[in-house]
Structure formats: structure tokens, C-alpha cells
Image (cartoon, rainbow, N blue to C red; front, side):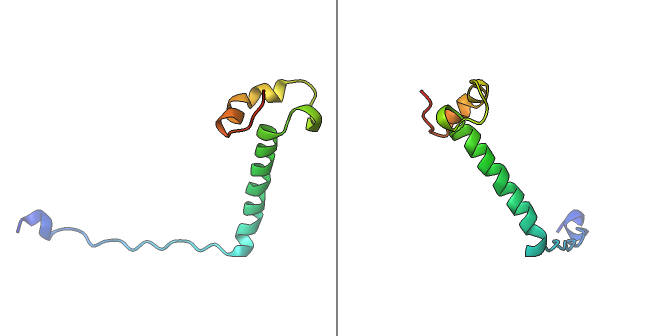
Length: 73
């Protein structure tokens, strides 16, 4: 046995922080809101359901729309 193997340091115990449901739900709700807004702008922001006039939003998310399988033309 070599000297290096015999002198290995002991592993350090790492304690993971706990996250309660009460602390997590506002962040989960915020993440869900962002996901819904992103899906709206990528999938439905054109035509009759358009919130903004013109094609600017459509052009900004055009490639994402095709990547996610939404038809646009």
C-alpha cells in the first residue's frame, strides 16, 4: 500500500437544506405563471387572440413556435 492511499482525508458530511411546502409554493406558482405566459406568446399570440397589434411578437417567437410544433403559416 502506498503512502498516498493511507493518508486520504475522511469524507466530509454535507447536510442538504430542507425546503418546506410553505416556502416553495410561491416560487412554484411564479414558475407556473411564467410557463403559461411563455406558452401563450409562443402558441397563441396571433390573429383573433392577439394582445399586441402587429406581427412583432409573432416574429420574435417564430422559431420557437416551429420548434415546439405550433403551426403558424
